[in-house]
Amino acid sequence: MNVTQQMIKPWRHVFKLDPDRELDDAGLNAVCLSGTDALLVGGSTGVTYHNTVELLSRIRQYAIPCALEVSDLEAIVPGFDLYMIPMVLNTPDPAWIVGHHRRAVERYGSLIPWDLLLTEGYIVLNGDSTVARLTQADTSLDAEAAAAYAQVADKLMSLPVVYLEYSGRFGEMDTVRTVRECVEHSQLFYGGGIASKTEAEQAAALCDTVVVGNIIYHDLEQALLTVEAVRQTTQLKLD
Ligand code: 1GP
Image (cartoon, rainbow, N blue to C red; front, top):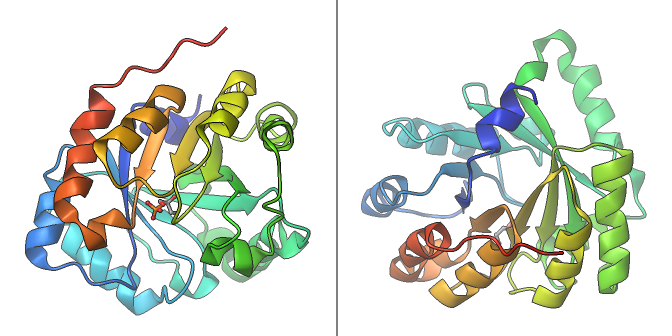
């Protein structure tokens, strides 16, 4: 296990902050002191170098680990603890699998801190989400197809992270369970539509890491309750 994998291994709960959305100082303070394991900075649209630097500098007042989920070549900001690189598995467009990645390597070359990078095998499952539209992801997958993609990531590509992305909608826990049953090595992330303790618990029972985003901006109080809910939930032991 390399350094980045060791860094994320203890992460059970993560808040995802979008540089393109407003969070006042009191809100950011509450998020950073909530007991969450880490912050992930990222979004599908409107992420710029400027708003990413600004958010990072505010977060750096706190001791919390902070990763950038890279979605735009123009918004790669130095100074994060870790850089998470999505590779969308269920897209027909190779640009989202390796294309943007190739351009990044060509552009940044020797400036890339390879030892701080970690690849995420994304399986995008909410057809109404911005990320699904952007990447033209095939979100019509049944549980077995999602699990097959997860095994491609886990067993063929040996990716450190498989990310079940329902962004904006709480996912089908049956699908999540089917994926859970076949992922052996990758750390399984779940993100999407968690707006209450109950949903956080359901996802935490099946996944290694639970990502909470949107609700921070709609109902911070509920968002904060998900931290303890995830912490109190042990993962189910599946046969
Ligand atoms: C989005 O997976 C994260 O990339 C979290 O989803 O914003 O729906 O909580 P929500």
